[in-house]
Image (cartoon, rainbow, N blue to C red):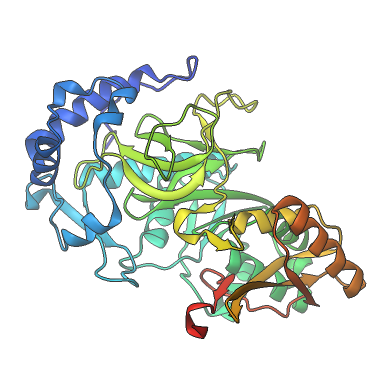
Length: 427
C-alpha cells in the first residue's frame, strides 16, 4: 500500500521548509498522545504552538538513553497498543534494553528509507543481496531485508556467522551485494582472499554499517572483493539502519530530511551549533508514530554540511561519524576519538586498516600503546616511527607504537573492539 505523501524536503539556503510543517504536526501529536512528552514538555513550560521551526527546538529538553531505559518496557508508547505491529530493542548490555514499538506505518516508512539507501548505493531489482547482520530483536537484519524487498531485489537472509555457509551462498547464488558490519566485511574479504575465490564472485557492491570504520578498511575490503562500498548509518532508537548513507561521491552521508531533523549541538553546553560546525548529533523523528522522539542525543560526533552534494540529491549531507562522546579517550589532557586514529593510518603509507589502543596507568601516569597492522613487505621499525610521528603531529599525544603482521589483530563477525582501557583495573 502506498504511503500518504508528505511534502518533499528541499535544500534552500540551509533550511528545509517542509520540516517546519512536519515539526508542527509532530509537536501537536506528541503533546496529545504521548504521556512521556506531555509531562516532559509541561515541566519545561512548553506548549506545542511554541515550536514552529528548527531553531525553536532549542527550547525543548533533550531525550536521552537513560530516560528510554527508565520507561521499560513501553513507557514511551504514543499510540494505542493495538496499533503496534512489531517491537525491536537495543542490546541492553549496560542495563535494561530499550524497547522500540513500531506501527504499520513506521514499518513502511523504515522500509522506504532503507530502499532509498540501497538505491543510492546503486542496488537494483536485478541484484541478489546477502544480508549478514543479525535478525530477531536487533533491527539490522529485518530492516535490510525489508528494504531489499521494497526495492524489488532478491534477499538472501543468511544472518550472522558461519563463514563457510556465507561463502557457499555467495558463490552458489551469485550474490551481487553484501550487507554487514565493516568488521565482518573485512573478515569475509580476508577469508575469500585466503581461499582465492575472487574470480568466482559476482559481488559488485558492499553496504556496511553498525560501527564507524576508516578509509583504509574501506579500501582494503574494496581491493580484495573488487567492489564499491557504502557507509550506512542508523540506530535502534531511530528506526534502525538506513536513516543515512553515502552516495557514489563518498564524501559524506545523505540523511532523509523529510522524516528526520538532524541538529548539531555542543556536547558540553547543549547549545545548537550552526550548520557546518562539528558537534554531537541530535535527532527528532518527524513522522514516527509508535515511539516518536524529540531531540534524541545520539552521542555521535559529526557535522551537517551546508552545500548540496555534487551527486544532485536534494537530501542534505552529514560527515561520516568521527566517534562517540562516550567513546572519547582522555589521556594526558588530550581528548581522542577513534576516528582520529583511522585518519592517521590513512595518511601513513604501509599502515593497515586494523589497530588496537591499549591504555594503562603506571605509578599514576597514563600511557597509550597503539598496535597497528603493517602491510606485507613494510619495515616494522620505520612504520612504527612514522605512526608515532603522525599520532603526535595530528592528534597531539605521545604514544608507543607496535607494528604487528597483517591479520594478527582480532576479527569479528559483529563489531571490532578497538580500545582496551586497563587503567581502572590497575588502580
